[in-house]
Image (cartoon, rainbow, N blue to C red; front, side, top):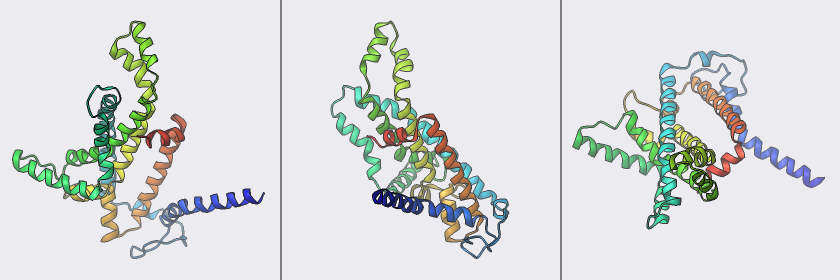
Length: 272
């Protein structure tokens, strides 16, 4: 009985520690504190004024971050699946080295990635006069670099446990290579593809260091907008917008749980 009580108390403390910052942000977003006050928590008077006062540039920054994250997740899925198939089933020398190379972006600090891509884009811009700094595709390529390992790792983890007899049976029954992949292989590895794409979306959406180097005038992602707002001109409307993102993230988590299961997502996405 005592052990159960201690376990419950410890679980409540850990859960409270994790949820407390979100509660503060959400609660302060309904406060009436002035613009000079960092937060008004607990709010003395409930109001929706900060939700109605969200600046248009912050909404544009949020839309840009969502668009970048969707493009990054889609590109990572399209490139990560063939890469994973090549690592697991390809007859290439040094497959372990190639697999380690795909994991390399996870070991490089994001600041170094941002500086590297900034210098690369300056060199490319001087040679072919292609302005990548401060552009959508320039930042999307940089985000793809740091997000691709998640898709590759999750798909490799499933392919390593894949039962090859399923494909052999399909081929024996007369199915072609493409039909076998589309009807047998792809449905089996799809949870890994989805898990990696979700992680790629989150990595791109929450990136700050890389975006700080590659963003330009009038081209600011939402994390950069938050950083600049906290550093120069903080407004409680940022708390309101952050609360909307918390609600959106919760909805996504519920959808993931109902579709493939959150436990499966965490185990699959963390493999590799």
